[in-house]
Image (cartoon, rainbow, N blue to C red):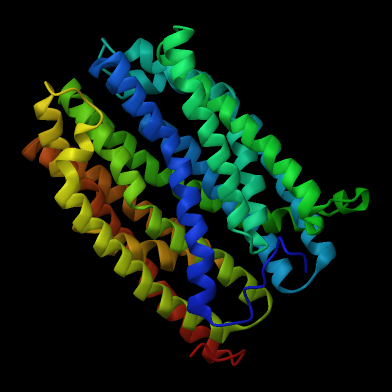
Length: 452
């Protein structure tokens, strides 16, 4: 085993999970900082309308990029299972299958997303004064989807082998490039809102190049040979049956976000700008919970491949303690610092944006502990290769978020929008926790190995 990989099937579960998670937290924060930097720079330099234009594309980006993140994470689960089983050839063949599947999916999604993005903006009832800038921004991102797809796939394959540190370094490097390029493109080249999009694409391209170089130099387990491309359709389907449902889960959730954005658009540019600014802060805040979930997917996949079922249960229990603890601390911080955090995105005159954004962060932060449980149990089931219940949970999340958008926004206005996500988390977490309980009982009942 090379220094660039880590066996998660041996050692104290809580220690493995924690030290695997810490770089993931940093990496996910860097990933989210792309949008954070876009919003901050655009809002400060180009004004509230430009901020609203970039912000209103968030649900569409979530729809497509969520699919990319879910799919690539799911594909890499098979790689992790092969690695846990110490199947070197299987790891290489899985990597080849991941890359081929990613290329096909990225091509299809590019045609779909680029062709439909203007119609999506119209359907979302994007305010007329910001729709042109919104289209200029999102059409560039969607036209070059192959770049983020491959960045996510390469980093997820490395993580599947137990290395969560180097993907974080690569993302940090790419983000640094984005921070340098974005003001250059907007202010010096005078590209306006499209300059923010080009900065993201160029920075992500640098990340892809860095990932390829790292794998070539340091990860021999992923060095694909010519014969590794020879696999049957059943092997390809083994990846797709996990990857595609995970992608669809994220997309189902995102549809609810799109419906909520429609309701927000009807409340006017101030509500849109408030939601956009506070959601960027919220996206950073939930990274610890998401990262613990990602760690559990890798941990579960490797231990499932090694047939060490008892370690999965122990890992779940310890991860719940750690992630819920993180969620409480982050929620309190957001509630206290909300006005200052939202105020970073706007000028002193936009007091209502700060007021609305602070309300959003207070309500979200009070329910982060539910989200922590959601991420853990969903990721464990996915790491076991189970996709049906997580997909159902995604549908529940869609129903709850859409219901809040349609009913609560109509009754309570912006306050109703603030409650959409917490209600969605509850609707999703409950079936996931029930499914994990019965899955755990099934392991014991089948006599494979006790989980506790």
